[in-house]
Image (cartoon, rainbow, N blue to C red; front, side, top):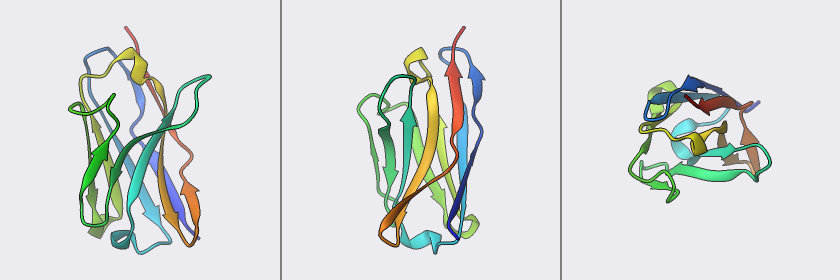
Length: 115
């Protein structure tokens, strides 16, 4: 059974930082590209960052230069370091993997950026 569990969300002031983690099980972690998505109230889910199995990364333009994703293969862990947070970054953040012909999602973790 494939499971993804996010953690690390919370309330932070504008300009602050948070680190999200996603721990996976049920897949051979090192073989898969992994993604971070977010969904703000009333908006569609959007891709925030992607990391390939070899560690290459891509970011949405809105977070480029502020967010960094990385992976720790021995620990089956995906991380999203978020700096210089803005109110518009407020959303539920999800990790995602496409494996065995389908998408798997975590339960999400809430990030709220507000003063």
